[in-house]
Image (tube, rainbow, N blue to C red; front, side):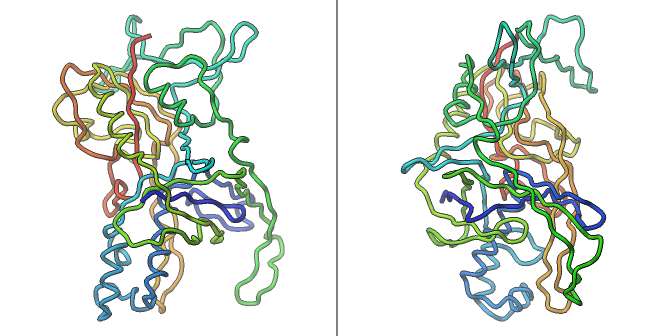
Length: 380
């Protein structure tokens, strides 16, 4: 099922780095949130709806309650993965009448031109007739090139579904970039630390938190599978457990995305665009690109990779004897919007539904990391 999630108030999504009043002054907010955040909210909702006692659930497989086993099969037991839960997303989305429109992070090979003689967007492409290449061991990568005399400017934003479809099909004349302020505002709020024992203000512990306030009818869209969930309800999402409403929507997007991928893969040259962050053992690239494809031997020709981001988060221990929040390991991720350019002489098919590797003990591909779209490209 696809869910459209809307805020009731402001949201706070942090990157998982520890934050302590007095040590750090400002807590920044990410948007959209990572799959780590959304999976936690969905699993908490399923657990609450089941009526299972938290203490019994914390016992895991040692519990004698049959309902605990049923819930654990769906969302996993503490410290044992995510069970049958599967997610795609989250994606930025807009509700208009009865339709939900997705927005994708701006691909890294798109830059904005703002000059006296030229304005708009340009799409970078590999240039092969240059006297040099980039050497990454066995990979010989071509620089990206821009057919413009104006100076391009890096920018942030999103492409709507319609604009992304044009970009992937190489119909890139005057792409419309949706700016950040069309989707959200950042709203700074001040606070001061409170001593949990005395309930009194701690002197000198002032801090600021940047919350996200979405525009009207804006929200998140995520596909949820493998769990029993109501058609609508309330979630506690992100930092401070801010409220959000969710509602099941009828969107046949998975089939459309799969069909578009199949068409693009029939091309001699195709590019893969990340729409959610991905983890790779070699930083910006996996140990072997071949693990994601079958029926062909695509060669990486070029890549447009934004600055890597660090993601982790907090783990909640439900055991009553040691209940609390514990810091999870931090990993470096390639952000959404990264673009990988491939060239092949064979027919290529996909071997996986997610373009991501996974650290030991994690199942990143199951909870929404490494989602992607595929489009066409040609040399500049």
